Image 1 (cartoon, rainbow, N blue to C red):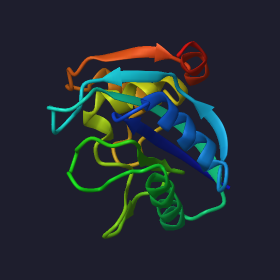
Image 2: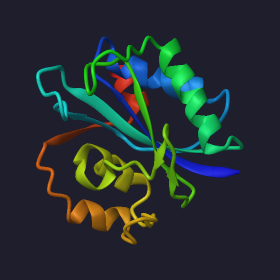
Image 3: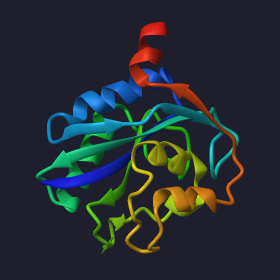
Image 4: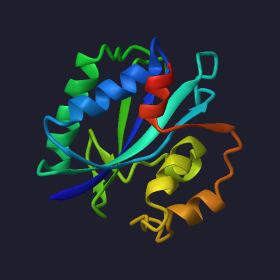
Length: 168
């Protein structure tokens, strides 16, 4: 079985519900092992858009990385993801952060995700569930990457998704 860390994000519509729908949809091809709290942050890249909710999950899957990417993109499409504007608003965005400790570079997939060391909105929830995971390219733990991250975009921890869903 492959151990994978995924970043889930949403900034359109009922953001919490999109995240929950993604988790539910992943059960078709993966087993949920751990999940971080949900964090809110301003958009990164194209800034004139609604705030994002982000969380990181750890899954186990028998799929290869390319197979997982296909399944993830299908799930995003099912959950109304539109791929029209780079870094634009979206109902759902799922990024493969780590796939075991593999380094993968193809035309369609780069793992570890190249944005990990420079994005606080990725590192904070990732550090919550995997602070000691060693980045295979940098040789630093997730905690060390967070400690040295120069991204000053504020992140706000909202709590676990089930608590947010039940309180509205």
